Length: 68
Image (cartoon, rainbow, N blue to C red; front, side):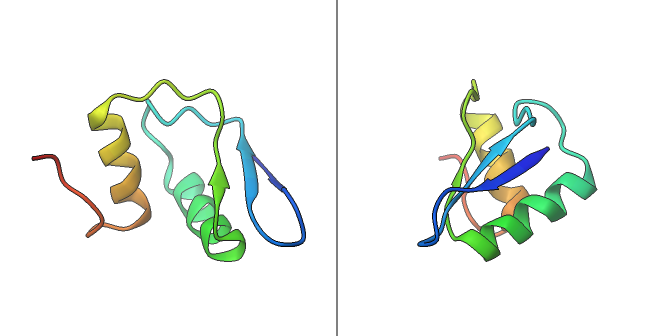
C-alpha cells in the first residue's frame, strides 16, 4: 500500500489496496494512521458493494455505521 499526501492542506491518496477483500491488520493500522494524519483519504479504483463499504467503515471505527 502506498500513501501519498495530496496537498499541504491535507488529504492523502491511497494506492495498492483492494477494499473488497480482507485487509491485513498492518494495512488497517496504516489506514487509521493516514486518516488521523491527513483527515481525508482518496482510495481510487474501488468496486465496493454495501457490505464492503460497511466492513471498511468498521475497520476504521467499529461504531461508525450499520446496514438498515
